[in-house]
Image (cartoon, rainbow, N blue to C red; front, side, top):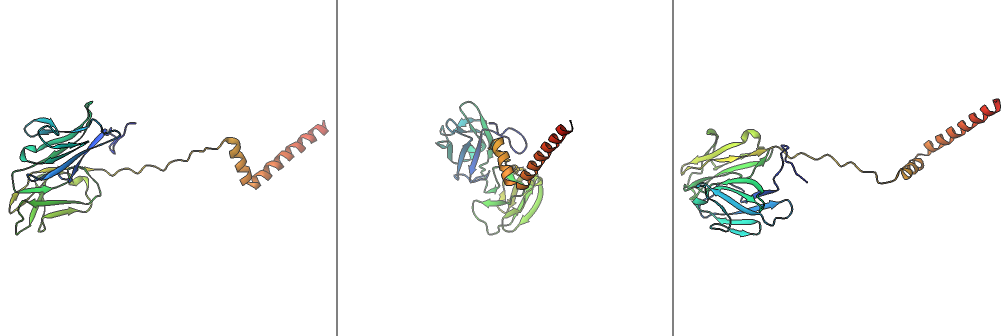
Length: 234
């Protein structure tokens, strides 16, 4: 059975999850990429296309494949686009992962966030500075400055979607795209299906409604009396 997302488009048969859920990492940090498949996950593997245009599978010259998951110890050349792919060529969603040379990264969700959810963006440093103050930007415009180095959006909306980055005394992070999707619709309540036969249903109604039963008997008697009266007049 085909599945559709909240926008009415056909959902892919698999989705790529990222743990921890962020799109920027320092060198030598580890990330786990997993293919979550609708049904049998056999034959699915994690694939990437690096910023240098090199297409390859996990377990070739990078990562360690474990079932439908891939564990990677990241270096700068691992920056690129990652997705899941089946043996028949089916694809999952794609995730962009960045491993910069700089000392600052932005911790932002790699996967789409849902409208109304709380989202926290953190300006992270390889060596913690004495001043944690960070400035956050979206699409090149200033959002706000936070002395704690992190910014929380209590209820994210579609207007928060865009390219985000942060700066501080140690430098500037790369930009990462944050995707915001609509809320998941609540399915309508299931309509109960009548499982009893029509005769049993009628019996139940009659037994449960004595006034209805008496009315039917009186109507039948009235019809018979009228019919007998008509025969007498003839």
